[in-house]
Image (cartoon, rainbow, N blue to C red; front, top):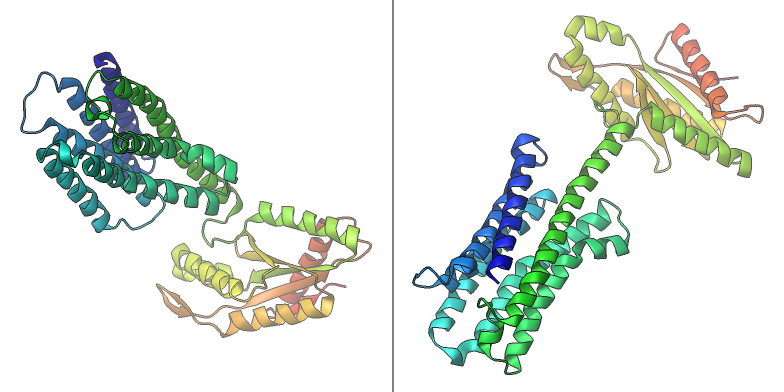
Length: 386
């Protein structure tokens, strides 16, 4: 049993060191990694106290063990809260620590309080485990879009751990001798539970790593699809959506329109006020355009001061009305910048897909040609492609 507990302490210490390196060395979710590292260190202290319980004498080794274990679960929960941007509630931590103190008071009262003590101990430790399970599952389903089966697999180590504590309480409630299920070194139950915990803690650490890996993948996916300045879709996403819409058009005959947009005299803004103000203008215009989109529209920054809007299920007349509204909205707004409030205008070219368009690129080229016609005609206006 001593070997098993020593192995568990080493395992938890390795987890703690690994998260500390990720947080401080590689700056991967630094606050989250530090909290998880502290949680695993607390768990290692718990197992180390159990390992040394036969050779040290304190007022209550059990109290220290219980507090260390509760701190482990609380810190891991707090890390998951920070990861999911969920505010941690102080009363949760105070309630768990108060529960551990009450468990110690009951222990001092003798065996008459055994069932109540084990019940309170189980409820107190299962609370942070349950909260962690719920918040992990919600993040995985709502933000990472994992399947229900995958979510169940990832949170299963926590569920099994809670089941172990609940099974221990059931045994005590049914009259099992407390010494055989009280985590005292050497009992068969203690050995079995410790071996299972070795596997479950390893699996749970893998679950935490899965959270971070899923978050990194989602961030990379977002970066690959989003213009970093404006938060709009980028060129690659727009071309993908155009090809999808053109395929749908050939299959169903539902027409779509393309609106090309370009800020007028934008170079003058950069030359006069600097690129920082130019970025603020681009961001302001993007916000104006974004606020006037339909749910089915796709708006992208194609590069520089050029934007494109894909309007599905839209004929020429509807696309012209929409483009005029965008042109007027940008003209009327005053953009707040470091150089004061500035006004800018848009030139727009509109094209609706034609049966002769072999691909979406042909429709985009016609919209682009209409945009240059708007520029040549004096800017701040909309032109329809022939």
